[in-house]
Length: 295
Length: 247
Image 1: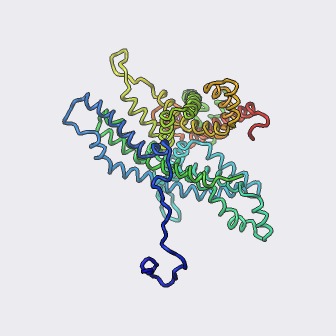
Image 2: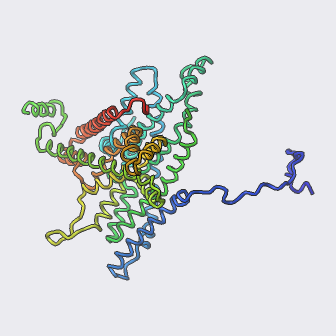
Image 3: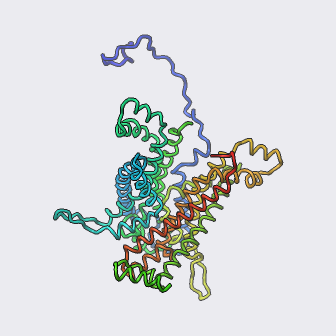
């Protein structure tokens, strides 16, 4: 009888005294959420926005009184697959830019705390320059000034618009990342450096094996927040002529050419971005609380 | 002025650096108008976003739950959606619906594109300012508020005379970051054809085909504008400092 609830594997012998006693009763509502917490989530906002869109639609629709026209939700549904592809492209751009920007930014950030004054100054200047110029201007800069293909050893490497846009978006990401990196490295207590020194680590070893692993935890919240900001900056590529979700939305609106579709359509796209970015920003807040540096 | 223009003409003829804004008064006029529009746009948006931030933070501390939830929605929406799509939403969607009949009997937009840019940017930056002000308010010691209550200040008076002045000082560094971001975000107004610096420069480089030169002028202008703002904020921070309070 006893064997029935013990694990059958032989590697774990039955623990002496492990009896199936009554576990304490756990209330399903053990964690009382406040009304604010209960109401305040992405789904409620989405429902509200859809409701708002519906109200707007109803009015205009009733005014036009044309029953033969397709209803607005039907049109939105019809365009959804096309728009989803565009949105997927935005996400792809954001991931690529984030990857490039993070790698470059971490390097630049480490250079910003270099013991060589000239290196430190140069890295600081580059960081400040890209951090203080507008994203859109940097995007224009890359789109218009990078050649459309580069020949290296007789090999033509093409640079289509979207690759240039990825590079353009990764520049500000690099600068922000570099600044976060510098802050994170400087926030590590100097005792860490000194003890690594006394253990005979070289500067490079200290950086790689002692300091950088500790910065990861401090960087995580700002890194995620930066990703959300970058994702929200990706529609900018539509201004410089790369086809993305905004371009597709506007052509869809032009194709339908209906005034009552304008507000629902834009709200629809806004809600997609919201659903994508809101969980990231909630997680950021949670991580910030968890990893808060206690003084 | 003659030698100034001669210098830029020489720069073009001898070195191939075609800075038309140096020697062509028409291009210079366009560019300076753009700079002026950007400054107007930035100042108005900063002003309105600060008002939204201060009022929003006050409302968020209100005893009415419905108001707090409403402000929560407002912040979540404007913080987690792209500013460009917000601008498009206001200008192309709401702006198309909001029309009045003009003097000539044709429907005219109620708010100009400049107006929509100010509204959209103020709301976007204002939502962030609410959070920044709130974190400042949370840093104000409870005993200070109790002391003001004991002196007979009501809720609004406590907020306006005691809490906000202290909260602003605590929040200034992050407020500065956000305002710098706002000045950088004014470039988005390009998308709805507000003639600010980026728009003026784009017109100049399409006419004169001097993308390389104008691009660098543009970047330097923005860095200059941001530098001025940072300097003003720094002076403000210094002037507001209370010895012994904060860092």
